[in-house]
Amino acid sequence: MKKNTFILSLLPIFFGFFVMGFVDVVGISTNYVKDEFNLSEAMSGFLPSVVFIWFFLLSYPTAIVMNKIGRRSTVLISMVVTIVGMFLPFFIFDRVTCYLAFALLGIGNTILQVSLNPLVSNMFNGKALTSALTGGQVVKAVSSFCGPLIATFAVRYLGNWQNIFPIFGSVTIISAVWLLATPVPKEETAQTTGNPFKLLSDTKILLFFLGIVAVVGIDVGTNMISKKLLIERLAYNNETANLGASMYFICRTVGAFIGTFLLAVMSARLYFRANMIAALAFILLLAFIPVASPVFVLGMIGAIGFTCSSIFSVIFSSAIQSMPEKTNEISGLMITGVVGGALFPPLMTQSTLLCNGAQMGGLLVLSGAAVYLLFLSLTIKQR
Image (cartoon, rainbow, N blue to C red):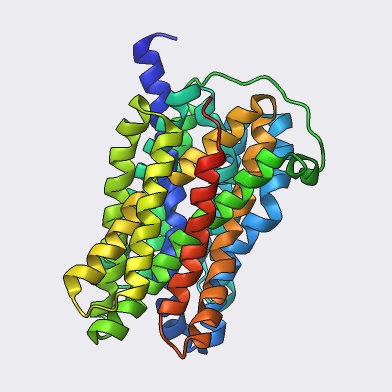
């Protein structure tokens, strides 16, 4: 493929990662939905589950379908589902359509994450694939960071937070049309095992799957606990404590950006190992040194985000390179591991209660995940 054609084919694929980041808007939308419909804490807290449950239910079935219709077509289907979800509350807005919109956002995002990552492998392989996937995570992180800004813009200048829906829907339309109009190399149709547990019987795939669960758990868990740490140790109010999440997202974006270049020139195994040693050290420092210093607390939160920013891409690319003939199915299985984002928060909450309400309990859960990832980095073989 000629260089100019290659770049033109690559741009709409990477723009798809921006659409992928829309799913993180559910975090800031929870309070808006709660106030809009006067919901209880429990009912509003159910909203993230409406989004993320689909990663567990649909990831592998999507991979099976993708084997038959191709990766590019599957990406386009995900965007159609997202577009329907984003414009539905624009025409009819009530509690039912609001929850349905987020459910469709979750369904579309699940299909997108399963299919877009393998679509990148149509363009890259080997070390370049790991770097390219990390570059995609940079775009996704930028989108996640923009979500709160878009919501603020909708409230201040468009009159209501609900206007985030048509904004996201319009961007998704642009992404879908761009990809539809761009030639992308098509992969060969692959055979399917029909049973994800057959893949998990392979020790390497099982270790990679648990690695995805762990790294997503650290991502969601650190984002969740950052605000609580600022309230506990620095007596910040709810609004000011959002600074913790902002610091985390900024450092994660910078880390992914730098990782894109580092992974293109150095061993993924060495990169993985060095970052997990550092991440474990930062989590333990934050857990056992209760210093009431904004610089220390925010610095540790940011450092965790920085060191873990590219690990998802390393694990994902290592998994599909271990069985390249089953890329679609392994992608579906790995994305199922995103359910770790739903498993870790309750574990951290229970651990915090066992520590008499101290957030050190939640940090100990994160340290356990970091220990496993360090173990994985020591056992993974460089290809």
